[in-house]
Image (cartoon, rainbow over the protein chains, first blue to last red):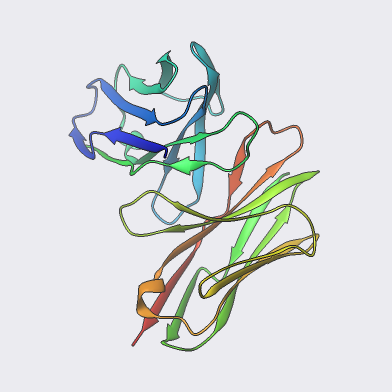
Length: 112
Length: 111
């Protein structure tokens, strides 16, 4: 069966510091991968999606970037965090021909 | 503009008191509507996919239905363990595999 991992689970970072969140998927090949951010009381906002290694599409202009160095690895990064980057970050995967997305456990990021 | 609206924002039920959650959408060319359950501090858990008007899916005390403009998640005789936020999302033609999410309905079931 497929599983999706995210780490760290929680992170507290000062403003201006760098960020690296990692997501890995097991049990599937060539998945589509997604990064979402969820603000309190709001729906999930799609940040990036990837259909293959090195292929990244950005949905929202922002302070963040994403990379996919391996087929089942997706990384969310920032060079300098802003207070507004605080939130709950979720990684998800879907099959190539499927619309259903399956989510990881999430990372709670607090920028102080 | 493609949009998903869920109502109510919050719902409090007594154990055994059945009710429905609503998800209305305005998208061009619906490819699928999805329901998720999210517990506090966790990632959303996939529940159902609905593809066409008239379709219904069931899982334990939950039943999801779809019309051309909205979907309902019916909860029959809920238990306290059904307490969670329920999220609705849609996928549309031209949106690749992009999902647009509603803000969710927070359900609390009290014994």
